[in-house]
Length: 73
Image (cartoon, rainbow, N blue to C red; front, side):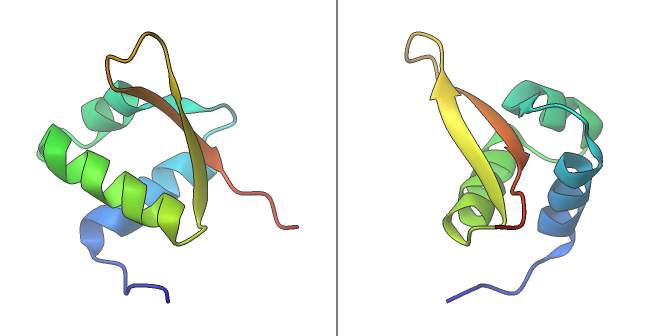
């Protein structure tokens, strides 16, 4: 079941889809300056859960994730 996208989710999705390379959570936060880290992470995980983007944790458990667009399969 896909959720309806709010403005923050739409901006995150557009940012990821427009990027030529994967983005870290911090890079997305810097683009969306007015949105808190918690809101960004929540929206990113919802988008990933809905299958609209892909993401995976990297690093040593510090909560660093990379995100990229989902290719049409």
